Length: 438
Image 1 (cartoon, one colour):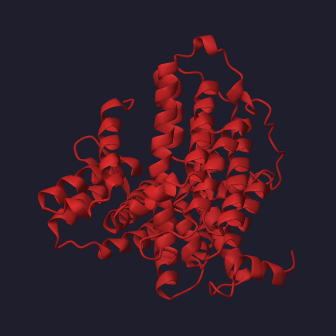
Image 2 (cartoon, helix red, strand yellow; image 1 turned 180 degrees about the vertical axis):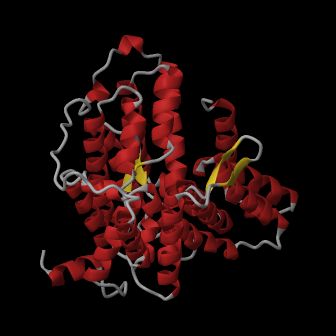
Image 3 (cartoon, one colour; image 1 turned 90 degrees about the vertical axis):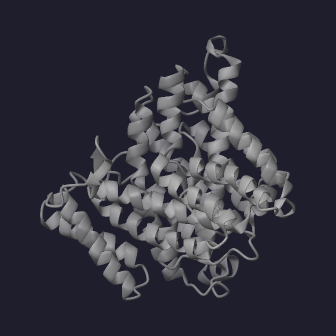
């Protein structure tokens, strides 16, 4: 597709962007989330899954899902196997419940199919548009704090502590100093208004790490693509006699629940930062949700846990990404990653940490839009924001906020202002806390 056709298809002029800017944004998003290729492999391989196959499945699921998002919904939002969801898959379902990983993949596949159905029926879009703006702003701010917390942990600035839960890390550790250097450089570039400041900050951090021997030089540039055979289609190959139907139902519903609200919060937060949200509604939400749903089912067939929208997409938006071409570039880079996995080793946690922290700052800015002088709004909004980093779960923060919103609004005498769906969600969230696997 030639340049002019690309411009018309993605609407570069209408969105005030260009192929060059979109390409930088796509690369920025990829570098911010490239860690998932290795982290997801480590987590899922704990279940007995073949590491090489999981790596390939992760890259392909991310590439396919992100490409669908870019071409179908025209959003600069990337998808990949979700953090938290992969941990639930491995440690709660397979190891905790004693379910075979093939069965867990089947659960992911079924949850994706259910997603597709309710998306085509416009149920997901209807639910998202029924959520009060204040809770959406709170979700965006909470996600910002959450990913900034992850970045601080990766940097070694915040570490665990038995007495105080968390505390300041060793600020003289070389790797921590590298991350601090990256934060300072990235902040300077952003303050100076550099488009793609987050991306260039990561590049400079990598160079510094290599020069000071804090990042190992890759042994090779090109590596062979690992076989997908050990995991492909395994979601449909298992002994049904070993499966308890009720356990499978719990697994499917939990995947469904967590992915639904993680995706809803992420899509709205990233779209709001990019300026897509109009009148508290997300344009083309149905298409974006369909891309997410389809990617989940495809990823399960390939051999990975739930594929979902990534909050790291905000780094690409911050770098200037405004159309689906950003996603197309990111998808292409995930395919390239199949062949150049040794080179990706230079993108360490200390390199991605500054990006996560800066993106967290950008995301947290939506907190200013919340009407804090109205206590009935402040309570559910605050609990949503604070619960995400403290519980290490986006879905939990959303759930707590949604439970308190009807309570405070009713007590204030504003029951008529609550959308009927919010009452339904109130019941669903309460039941989730009661019956969800621990």
